[in-house]
Image (tube, rainbow, N blue to C red; front, top):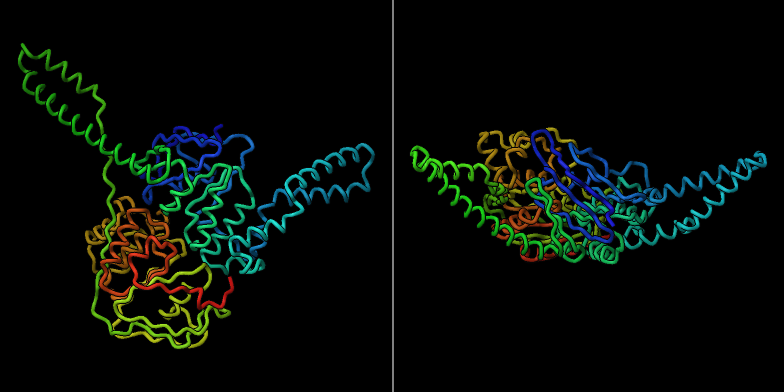
Length: 518
């Protein structure tokens, strides 16, 4: 049975086409992986099927009485709401029914006989519904899911705006799972999630009976949980049965067959054109030339899609720093309360270190304390000599209305227009992306703009806070190669062992130093 039907969908932003006559259907129990390069329109597609965006053309039809739950990449939580409030809001329809039940009970005392009968009937229906949906065990359910995702340890009365990026993702994910929708729509759920909770989510999705659509660039994760791949490329959406690895094999074969057919057709076109040109003027051969011209006119010409620029990252190594890069002396990090024990850490020239550990234990805070962006609660951090630090921030907030060109020009005013465009193109951005405002780009494209700034500076130490979030497969591979080649030192926060294992020569587990108990 079809849960969702999308027919002849066409959509674009300004002169940038995203979809052209795309069709899609979702069947009961299908576990779909939606894949494609950054900026191909995966999040846009989700926004269209959930009704947040109206398509230019085409129709989206949901089956009757189907509830969809959507975990948005950019979902916003309101200030003043606690974790408990957000999780309980999953049961809003039931809570409204309870309110109505209380209203009926208050009204019963003054109702006449006929009205009483109607009200009692409504009351009985509501009570049955509440019992059916386990309304009276809501608190226990909230606690169970909160424990599974590590939210209980944060305190359910904590304001959601005080949480880190990963913790906010967990709260939204927990709310979604409590809603128990008929279909889950997940946009990069593993971004900001630590290894432990990625494993939990993997188990949850494997056991999930209903259908889900998952956008992710985490290939091992995709391979384990999906059985259908929809590939988004060049305004098209194509369906492949199997996991991501199987899709890659089929796609490679399909691509080589298309290229072979294209070469054969181009050869045939060239021969036909040559024959027509040589014979159309002669009376004796004119008819033959015209019949070949007709064949040319009727021919369905194969077009190869323009190759997307593959990103290239090459970090520039500056001057050689001193032997000691930084040293901390009883450094206690945190904001209102300590997040770490007194730390005595040091990093020497040539070291490449990964920092791991669960969300919210102070990894980003440690990086910012080392850089001096936030004051430490006590202790000190001493930076070495001749340091040229390159810092990649995890989250950049704000509504950035500058174009990509202007964004780079702010940092490199001496560059010519050609140099700016060339630098952005090397990072895998097309002309249309380069001329767009930063705020309209996808998460992955914005990350490429920030990486572009970083690779065009001389650095000898890189401090990278979750640089793989939002990046597509090609960009991740290019970044990994660049970090392996880099002659300087690296301090990297990352939750993907497949990414950092080949890059670093040491791992710091932050959970050994945190004051938080998980």
